[in-house]
Length: 517
Ligand code: AMP
Image (cartoon, rainbow, N blue to C red; front, side, top):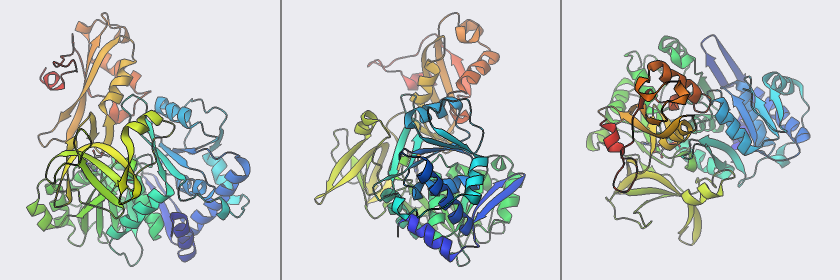
């Protein structure tokens, strides 16, 4: 069954079951499976009848139930959708809309002042009206096909412009088929905890496993996540069975001793992806939730959420430190290659290349960046797509271990960030001559914050002050200017003005030396 067939069958099987709940501090909003079916049919019919082309639809908002119905409506009407969370600043949103050139933008929150070209813009009220009473037509002939792009998720790009990863329905179906095998059976129905906004591919794990298993997607709004006491109150009544988050987020929860089986008695599965899961975190979870299974999974947005996974038992944790990221899912081959692209022997480190049936078809409208990262690989006569991850790792008895990045991409609090993306945006500010951004790491190697080192024109135009008198007020002004082009989590906490950036013998910025300044 493909994902749209699964959704249709769940609408039939569980009409009264809650399909989706948004939990905000002041309210909860939910829709049942039958409402999800009806709303998406009406929205899908509206799209087919009113939007002639098949361009991707940009969907802007934050976890509104009708946002999910709109995702499904796009798929039923044969369009890809591109989810953009409200936390994405105006400049980035403009870049995305400029790149996608959509015929339709659906905005669940007020759109910043951006140029949407000729696109029709539907507001939350418009969608509510269409979903409640619009006509319906038979959408089956319009459903998205196996090789069509199902969604486009934009991630940080080293040039300063985000890149749109295109995931086909087949990629998604192949991921789901494997992902479901990790979800321990929940007799009374699955309830998936959603932490990540829908513009991050980690959310695909909870949303689509829930949609395919006829579960309830229990979404936590950004503001709810800011208050641990309100968050825990909601978790207590969630009846959650599957937890999907970054390790960073569960570590925050584990800081409170009441995060245990008594709070979430139905919890059976923890799925982690996106950053290192430490032995300590896994062990604390196993202890706090003795009936639950903890999985470490690995993969980039470019290969549909995750392609390797491992059940972390006390034995696995006792015998492996760091923890492995797992074995490949069916349909995936992991290669470890040297700089020339040749396979290295087992046990040797190299770049992780993902080959298989969930690898993206490339970046939207970006042949150059697609060519650099994607290729094909012959597997016993079948040509498969391949993606060079930029991750370093090694295989031990076919078990994959992740050992860091070979470029300037980092993960901070679960967010994927290209340091060059931040640098490119800082370099655009007036008065900035050169810039380097460095991660500040905790003793365990995880990134705590970011520091930017700037060489400025004197006097520094951007801050009305020469570099010697750069103050915290100037840094604040600079951060304010950056906020229009970068999400808050990408804005460096510490900004230092330096006379020059040290360089290595081959003329590159000497990042090691810079860190010691
Ligand atoms: P994203 O595209 O946001 O999912 O980020 C993908 C990147 O996150 C990968 O290329 C890795 O660098 C990192 N990553 C993903 N899963 C893991 C994991 N289990 N352990 C360590 N790093 C991971």
